Image 1: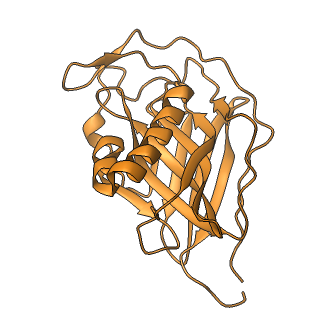
Image 2 (image 1 turned 90 degrees about the vertical axis):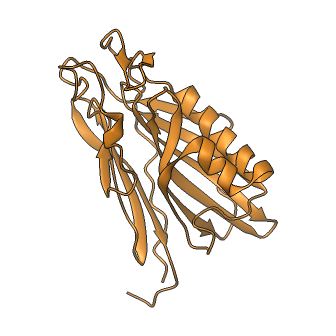
Image 3 (image 1 turned 60 degrees about the vertical axis):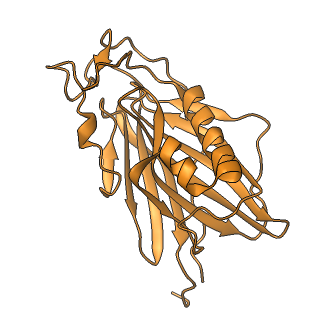
Length: 226
């Protein structure tokens, strides 16, 4: 039996983000304020979908992913099937906006549906790029909410950039192939694995502790009863 999708979407509280450092600069000198930007993440996800559908995979990857971004799914197109519809429904962001996750749904055809989770990193110039994406097919379309829902991690003085001493986040250390990652301020973390039962798990700072918010599974192929 294929293991069902498990994703926790309820019980989260949108937290106001505490003020962080005045700005951070990458190696190219681009400065941006460390703050959550869930609208920017949703916009990147939608733009990624449009670019894929109109200009093809190579163009979409160049503009909205890293060179070694990992795409996983139950199909043979690396988690990016030829979709007729692709839309994010939920977004979760770290307090500093350096890491985010989206959950959404897609439609390959009138009889072929699915949903997905994508992890997003804020890149050196301030844009969001996909780090890892996991998709799975469903027997019916995922329920579409009336409005996209955004959640931001709880902020606090103890959750600053790892590289705050130099005021220069290390963007060169971003490795999409790594099996885990964290926001620069540690208020959002993720783990993923690619095997017979692939998964993405995400935790977010809430009520003073890290709490799981996403547990998303996508079998890569049919398996027997277990």
